[in-house]
Image (cartoon, rainbow, N blue to C red; front, side, top):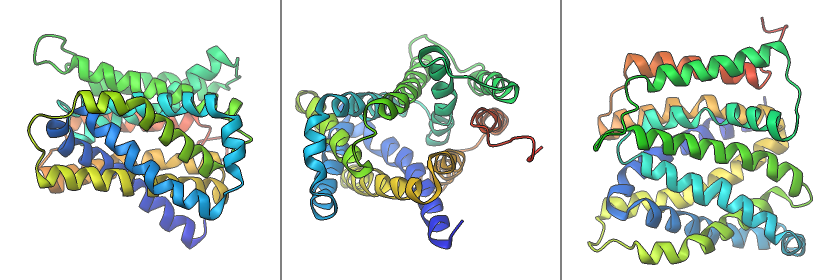
Length: 292
């Protein structure tokens, strides 16, 4: 890995890990839907000038793929972002990021059911191991009584399932659209879809300065800049290696939560999270015969 790729890799993990911190701070004051509606709007505003400067010709391709871009905008941004923001109202940043780390497991499962994708024995074992890790992680926390975290955990799992679907859908329908075009178009579609809800759920009390700062950082750095870094990593390392950033995100999310919010990392989070990440590595085929 080249030094620049390594720098981008670590910075991307730090930015996406910080997104859970920013959501944790902003969601209680803005509300999940308004926070995410403004997040994707800010990201779209930041990405459009870059698209016009670097890939202006790609706008014609984007127009011909408007519907697939809208589907990806909903399933990869609007819906999962809102669900994770809702989950963060009662779950710590580190815990929410560990649930988010199960995205490759959902992607593998959806690939099996939808695309009839094949998996070897190690990948099947990894998928089963990831499920066990999620059980360990959420054991004793799935309480659907008033005030319980069961609904929040369920929302997080639905969000990761949506990410998994979007991964396959984008590969099938948006291969002709440049990565920056996919990022810009999907964030724009998400902003348009959420705009009425953003206005409807606008908070009655004006959010604090800290909440506004968290929102701006979330939209500019943890969304717009993060997308640019991610697609640059895909170009330099390939999709599979770039996706391994998933393993570092919970580390940074837990670190930022501990430093800025005083959140603790429990033994259950360490054990369950480790099992999830190991299962994810096996499912992605990152731990093959040579590694073993």
